[in-house]
Length: 115
Image 1 (cartoon, rainbow, N blue to C red):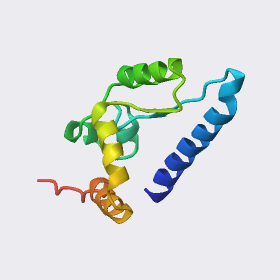
Image 2 (cartoon, rainbow, N blue to C red):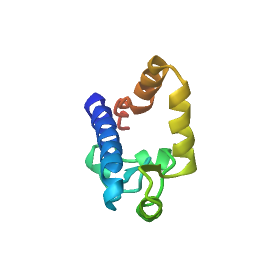
Image 3 (cartoon, rainbow, N blue to C red):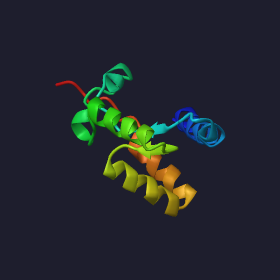
Image 4 (cartoon, rainbow, N blue to C red):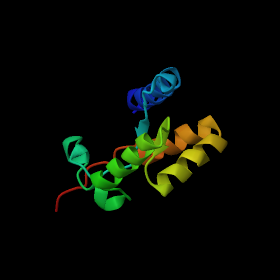
């Protein structure tokens, strides 16, 4: 999880830098920050059923958000109001709180015993 979070942070900050450097040249660079999206990712990652337990957006919803942000020449966009609100909460919480709460959310659940 640490490498995943760090790489997401890097991509966001790198994109924002590219956006600032390229915008005067007519080039738009936008970071799309989706939340949980309905794809095969969770099944491939070995956490089948994740989408049944959590809110998610469809791929079409995420793509529409990204294209609208690109048209408006935004440096980043967060897809979905719930995800946007959560991104704001993370800014006012302590870093320790964010890390501890994230660990609870993403900690793998032990396998259920078969009957």
